[in-house]
Image (tube, rainbow, N blue to C red; front, side, top):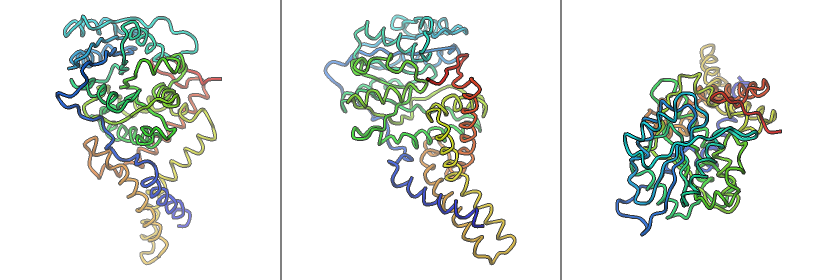
Length: 396
């Protein structure tokens, strides 16, 4: 009983701290402001939308028309950068553009990937070069699987102008149509917020800096001020690296949610989500065995210990219903589990799930812990960071 109760009691205290002192990471009220229908500057800034695409022929016919359908009053162009695809990505982009407004779309090759560059960052660099040629004031980097509502660009630009921001990023609403996506995807966004509380990231006085690579509007001059994409050329987690560069150079960044900016990508069950998470989890930990050990112990203590204590307490009560120890263990476990569910409930509601679904957080946490361990194993085996046929080794 003591072995089960002590970690559960500690976990309950940890949850009190997380709920009150971690920047309100669990809340979902940091959202992209709505744009009044008539508001805006006298002259809207020009924007180049850059879509880095590697083997994205399946999703571009869905998402590219949403970019061309933007109701944006200023000058706008779309550049799709084909990152050495072998599935007909360029042809799919050209056909999709021709059906809507092909004159505003360029489909360009990224070119051979140089040593020391991450593939996506190299493709983004090619798009940023096109933005410089067009003398665009802003660059919107958006993933090929992200669909935008017609007012998306307008809202992003107005937010940047009104708050004098150098980077505005939106965490797209990810797909949750299958049971595995419903179990794991809201938890993915929840854990991202736990690592990078949005309020802290948006606070100029704090060092925390984060962005979501699916949708990032960047001032071109701010990008050039930090050395361009050359400065983050080897970064696998390129979005947060770019946000850190801009913020630590004195720029201002903002990250939030937007219900109508959504990803259309299917994850292919638990194995698909597993591959996405394992690709970067050990990178996030700085390839550090000590960070890995601390993360695994922390995750198990905070998320797995409370349900384990509930099970131990119930088992103890089955043996002796009058014993005080099983009741104490059960109470400690129930307190921690309840507090974790309370922290998760706003995110489950954001994704249209119930409070009952919030109780599944420990299961999702255990699975993500296993993914993190697998990420370290992959890196040790020389296959870490593998994505779409490319493997990125840790920096020396």
